[in-house]
Amino acid sequence: MSWWGKVVGGAFGFMLGGPLGALLGVALGSNFDRGITGIMQDEALGSGAAERVQTAFFTTVFSVMGYLAKADGQVTRDEIEMARAIMAHMRLSEAQKKAAIELFNQGKQDDFPLDEVIEQFRKECHRRRNLIQMFIEMLISVAMADGVLHKEERKVLHHIGEQLGFSRAQFDQLIAMVQAQQHYAGGRAGVQPKTTLKDAYAVLGVSKDVSDAEVKKSYRRLMNQHHPDKLVAKGLPEEMMELAKEKTQEIRAGYEQIKEARGMK
Image (cartoon, rainbow, N blue to C red; front, side, top):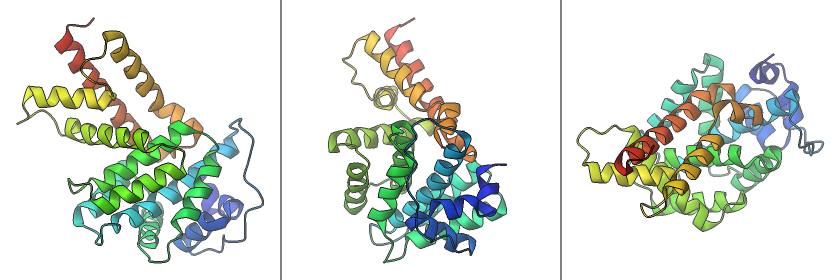
């Protein structure tokens, strides 16, 4: 049975507990907020652990999207459309889409417990840094949906990043990478080659002055970090595989353009 099937059946909602269980319970009209009996500390990923993390990821990402969308004082149409686009990419069932929208709406509430939600998410992920980074990249994409990263949005993102173990410098690099990925994903039409090549380097998180060996190293590291199957094994909901695939396509496209510009083999 999939993680969602177990959630609907009540197994993981009850098991999750805490603020995430409360949010999910409201989204599903169930009483899951009965307190957590202890965070799983086993580093090995059995199927049950992966499904539990998938439940936590789904709950956290959509509720925090709502919180972030309101951070600059108003929820824009672009931010709503970005959230809906993510749902569309995930090919959610009607029940999943309804739950995701409800979680998004809960995130917009004034009493949304951001710190408690992020702390439980961090513990549930239990040092799965690549998975946590994917979560952060999705939030950055939503924040930049209107083409601008507002001061309050950046402040919230930095706060979330620090709580999840990312330094300010590391987080700013992620912001630059996601911004470049969005430019790159938009295609080359109407974009000057110089600008596109600059974006390609940013997608890989390297400067144009690094060696060919460093370009290849960064490319391989990023492809490994965003490998869909590996992320799902660590707890990314299967429905989000398409988003991870798009990330790898953008990384590969950037790498291929740099190779061509440098004459690399």
